[in-house]
Every structure is written in C-alpha cells, then in structure tokens.
Image (cartoon, rainbow, N blue to C red; front, side):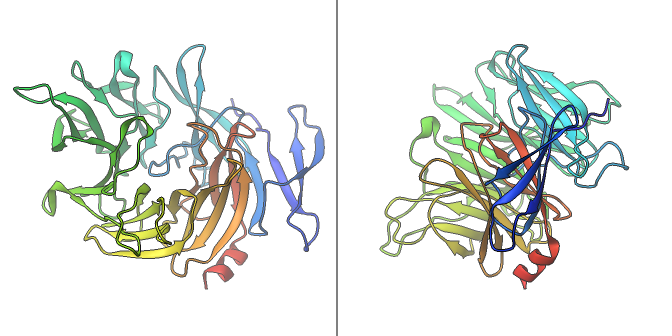
Length: 396
C-alpha cells in the first residue's frame, strides 16, 4: 500500500535570511508551521524527510531505483532496522510526493545495501549466519544466498553490485593462511547468475569499502582498513584491475608540506572518468594538506578544496559538482555542495550526527535534482530538492 510520508515543504521567509519556514504534514493531514534551521542555502528549494527511522546507504553504494515508472526518476531505497525482529527492511521512497512502500526485507542483515539498475540488491548478513544475499526488488525471485562465508571467516559488512547486475564484489576477512595462523584478507567477486566466486587479490591487512568504478567496472576501488578505530594508514586508498593492477595498486600516499605522511579517510569512485576517484583527506599536523582530492588510478592527484573536518564525499554523474559532509566542533554535520572544477563551496544543510547508520553519507541523485543525506537529529534520511538555476550559476 502506498502511504504519504511526513515531509517538510520549505519556502523562504525572506531573501535576506537563511531561516526557512517549514510546513510539517502530520499523519492526519493537518499542517503545522515551524522554523527550520537545518537549511542553510537558497540552493535548497525544500527538504523531504523519509519515513521515521529510515536511512540511506553508504556513499559508494547505489540506492536509486524505482519499481514503478510513474514514480519520479529520483526514487530511492532507504533501509530501516528493526531490533525486535533483527530485520532490515528496504523501503522505496519517492521524494517528489512522499509516497513510499515496502521493497524487500532480510533477517540478521548488516545495515548497508547496494542496488543494480535492474533492481537486484546485495546485503551481507551478520556473523551468526554470515552470507552474501541477493534481494530481487522486482520480486521475480525470492531472496537467494549467493555465497556463505567459510568457517572462521567473515564477509565484509558492505558489498557492491555492478550497475548491470551481473557481478558483486566484497571482502572476505580472516582467511587462515596455509601452514600457519596468520590471518589474510581477500578481495572477491561473485557471478550473480552462476554463484562462482573468484578471489582477485589477497593481503595481510583488512580490505574494506570495495566498490566498482561506475565509468569502468573493470576497476574496483577499496581501502586499507584499521580495526578498532585506530589511526588511518597513509596507504589507505587502493584499486584493483585484472591487467593493470592484479595485486592491487596503492593510489596516493599524501604528504604534508614538511614531508610527513598524512592520513586519508573515505573514498568514492567517480562516475564521469574511468579510473579516477575522489578522496576525503583528514590528518593531524598536516600543514594545510587537508581537503578533498581528485585522484586517478594512475596515481595522479589534484586538490579540489582545502580544509579540515571533511568526512565523506560524493559526486554527480556528470562530474561537475560534489557533496561532502564536514564534522563541526559540536558534533553536528554540515553538508556542502562544491564546484568540482574550482572547489567553490556552498553550505546546504546542518544536521545531527551519531554512529552508523546516522553519518550524513550525502549522495546526489542521478539527474542531479536531489541531495540525499542522513540526519540523526530527526532519525531519518532527508532529500533536498536543488534549485538548478542557482546551481548552474554556481558551476559556471
């Protein structure tokens, strides 16, 4: 059944202020007016909240998909965890109307998901029954276990699926080395149709954030992870290619102006360039090297914009603009838009931040009309409708 969602229709109180009047639609249809301080820019025409308790997926994963062509092309899937039943529910949400409906569900599931263009979602399950599961959101087939982790190993919390739905990638953790007790970590792919698993490379450190390059899925981006929240390694960002980098390739080992190696945080493969990723940099005593970077699979790199506090980033399909979240001193999150070429920035939104899944994790819709983010302050995802006239002026 299609249900209306609680939503905020935002209009400007005055041209001289960023304080916006919000109209909250209650479940009974009545309307209450409140002041909304979340929106910080005239770039944002309105903000629409997803159903209570629902969140959007990880920055390098795709959640945009619709089952009904009459729904808006920017329709996306949010997740909601139910602790009582230990179930992940996937919900299809149309930001233009607020309509939403159930799309799929999986028990004992990890929180993040990735969806192909033909409606196939991959989700890994938790340690007690660790597997990689395929959910067909078109409902042509029931949930199907693609592969189960061998005893003593673990499939990573997040997996990615190619846009065409033919293959998924993930990391297999804690593989026991032959003839010893050393733990190894493997980058693997699985053929969706046949279930054949291929180990692409193996390391003695944790592989995480594995995801396909949208512009050239022969490349897989991934990160060097450190357990327990330890210092991020200076060789965090890697990529794999069967011919160009069969053993993996360290892409960027940034240095401060005085020659100290500094730490990287999150990465995301670009849509518009083959073999290029955008990177969020964080560091201590970096001497001004912090910021957002464009990095190629060949190791070339360019500073897009400098500054501290960047946490996650994402980019439009055409490569003209980006979004990023910045952690503020009071632990709130600021979400900004950036001109990818010039580094110019515009603050769009300020919201709450808590542990996963409530990091902001901003995304740009495929058509560039919406920015999707998570806000722990209201315990939901938020869709920001972007004023394209203002955006185009910003990108010139």
